[in-house]
Amino acid sequence: MPGFDRKVTDAAARAREARLTTTGRHSGKPVTVTVWLTTDGDRLFVRSGGGLGRNWPRNLLKLPEASLRVGGLEFNVKARHITDPGEARGVAEVIRKKHGPNVRVSTPDEPLTPGEQATFELFPA
Image (cartoon, rainbow, N blue to C red; front, side):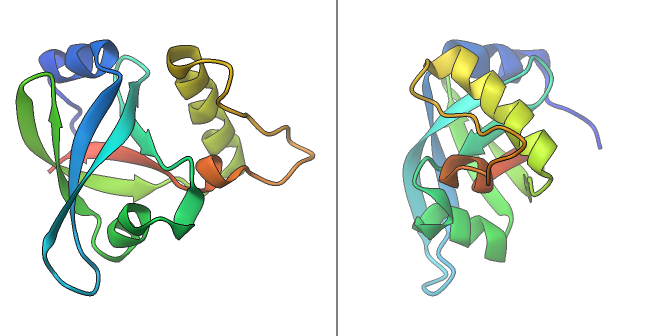
């Protein structure tokens, strides 16, 4: 799957937050939230620190299409729920580097944190 243009990953690297608009799983209406956005230089990730109990991750699980607004750019995305524990922990490390030590990363002998359970990779739609 093709990745994002460099101007998108650069904007994601600079921005602390982004605006994500999902489709309400019950209402079918647009729902916009502020999320932490992280990049590893090539890929984009969002996650809910509150876990899968929050509405926007559940909306993405039902309909994995959304729009993202960051650094003056707005574009459509498709989301992939990250369910592999090793990958979720790796993304959590990337998020921790950007957002600080309060981002908890579980160890392999622990269950995933709520944030690790609600981690999504975004792709251009």
